[in-house]
Length: 336
Picture (cartoon, rainbow, N blue to C red):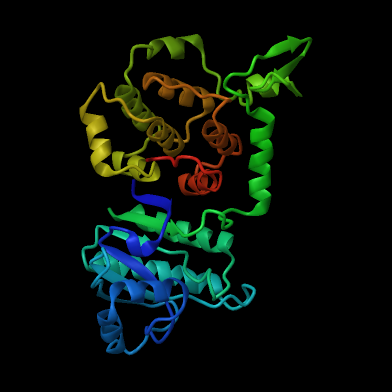
């Protein structure tokens, strides 16, 4: 998976390079900067001393010393002044210049913190949006694994407004796995796991939150015997996509895509199937068919499934933004 959003301590990440959210002196400080210097040992500070500092938005590279990473890429993020002083542009430069420097050093995997979100005060939800936008664009043209490391999952990674929209969407559609639906007229009365009374939901919402992209019976029957691999490759052709564009937009590793292409009976994971559905901008019926070929189905007892459907329903097929939301709701990410 080229871009992975994970929770953890960046000093423990096993990658070719990690990125340090440094200050202009490069001599260490608080937060991530101080933690990286402490974990790397005094030799890191000695090498940084000879670099002559670093300007905001730029990036410089050193050895990793006692860190699991071979390299540390130091970049200086902007201080947040309400967004009125080109903070977003400067933050984007941090990610872009760090990625380009890593590419020059033949780095295959790199881990970023959320630059500027600590003492520099950059709002987390805005910072992660910039990070994902720049990294996502870079990965369309480069093969590299990128980790975006969130230290504390409680940090807000999506806007409160979007979080509330998705939470309400889940609440309206979520059905407990062991619930016993009972139909009364035109409504569905849902009991929870303990058998206590739940709430009324319109039957159309509870049972069929999305009904788009209906096809004829002939279209369904024509490809009935396809395997997952066969259907995926056919859809790529029908959507006029290239293999490379497809697996990159799906946030899928090239090697995994090669396995799928070369094995007609390949059995993918559910997040992999849905990642391809997003990359190909499939409608709900096409998505259900693709899942069926891999032995899966969409379920209203799965928050993961409901969140993906939310973005499909709102015509948002940006896999990185979907993964932001999945991470915020503590779900598996697409492509993994």
